[in-house]
Length: 229
Image 1 (cartoon, rainbow, N blue to C red):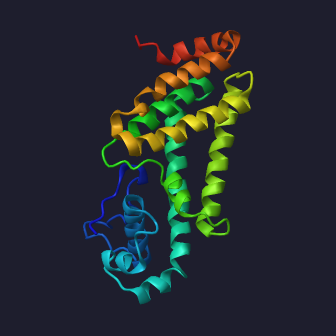
Image 2 (image 1 turned 45 degrees about the vertical axis):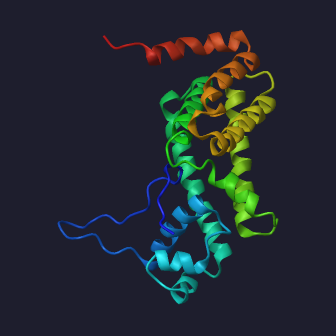
Image 3 (image 1 turned 90 degrees about the horizontal axis):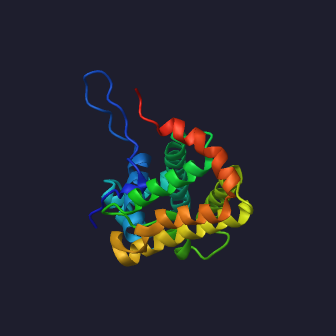
């Protein structure tokens, strides 16, 4: 299998060069994890075996099991790494609009649409993985459940900060929209229902946030977007 790193996974962790010399060769564990990240996202967790990962990483099964106790533990580590990259993306998307929760939600979904619509995207790595991990005691399943619970909490919190009448309902609705967008990307590619997610988010925000709260946030929003000079 020839593997490629999809946009959703973020850049592969590398080792910076020292001075003018060549960069040190990545550790075997890093090579295995980098390879698994790309192959799991592209082909699925069950379709990729230890032999294929070890071969693609330029190592062998003995070295694999010196680095990871099992394939299940590798899957969990892959998902933990995906989670770290995801929250870094999330924080960067909303950071320019600190203090304006509604604008943060809009920016979050605008960035989400751009990222998910890119060529090579296969939607949400967590959503794809949970379908393949029905066992509640699988270490990867526990990582997924914790990640999705955090996503739900963050969306509810932003909804409350934006002044929503029912922040829990709005946050959950936004999560359903985001999760559905990931899935539709797999069925319709980049030109499917995902293209209206931004409009849908703004409609939801208009419906859930009282005009008084929206008006209170507007001056700050205008100050941040006004042209200089």
